Length: 184
Image (cartoon, helix red, strand yellow):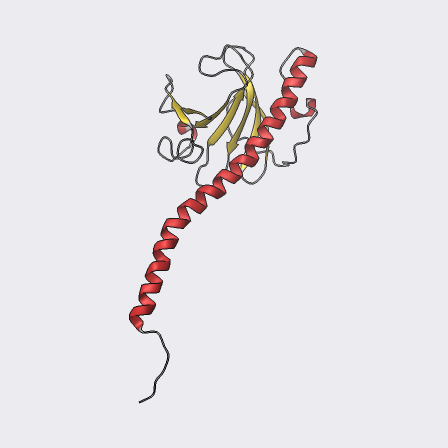
């Protein structure tokens, strides 16, 4: 009889099973890490543009209506609007995100900026920063995560803002249509 060094079929199946279990556990965590990284880039862009908009407001006494008025470079060259509402003006986008100026014309409903996911599994998840100190749900300059159910967010409440971004749900009169989360 020959003495051969080889793995048995059972040993190979056990190894494949272990690799499959590890992949099943690691893949969702990897996907969350990728999404959080993309979100971090969008939030950084949002904060940079917001700071430029605040500087414009201090210098001119009014909230900007176009990106051309701001002293900041926005490398996103697309024109997709993440939210098709009238008070969200002039979107600039890349493959994943759209940034828009929020300028409703009234101080009580909000002026600020929004960056919205326009592609991927969390499409219509957004980050807002409002510049209005008397906004009914948030403080001025506060970053909030929003899941816009009424305009196409197809996941369950909290799948993005709570589970990935670690936000805390803010009960509002529009909960269920626009789910708001305070980020820490």
